Length: 98
Picture: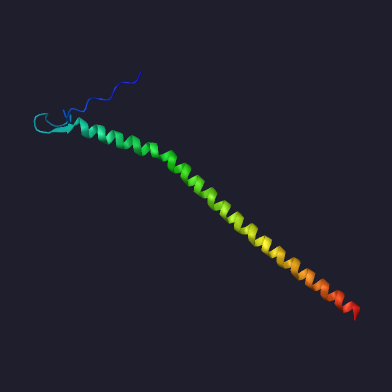
């Protein structure tokens, strides 16, 4: 069972460095500050998979956009080739009659 988060009552925790005197170099940090930093780090790490999925979806959308543009271009080229072939065929048939 997960433990409840520490109460944010503004108490200060004291941290000291082992190589310095405890009386001279004490660092007091509020529990609220340490909790805030911890929550920020968790939020940043939790956003990573979302950004990765977003980049993947964006890449797929761009690929589909290029695919559709190429399909439209190919369809236009085929239509032009068909019209040119039909025109040349009609001209050849007209020349045979004369």
